[in-house]
Image: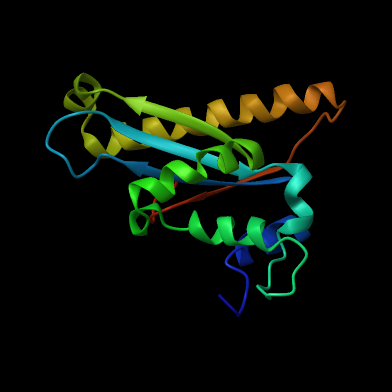
Length: 153
């Protein structure tokens, strides 16, 4: 786990002035039936100081960094590992989920339903950020959204 930060894009965009870098991905495009689900996630502001991660065994919070590395690709994790990261994600990230059911997929097609689910996930996440930060008197947040894939939502 030595080497450059897996959060190089987040580090760059946060230093460029963005308040939140939101990552978006989908699941469910491969199966023949069922919904398409998208998730949007952004590291909470309280964790920004941990973003510049150059993994080093002598780091102050190695467990935090280890868990960040584990959530990079859920497909490489066991079910037990994924379940073990649930609380960590809830504590350290804002999360939004968007779902399009099979009827919506049939009506619009899987690609458009995927984009709709992604938009729903981002909308839910931004509402959570704005709701929490309203309590903190933070008015205007500057968001950047990184989508897995080559399309703009």
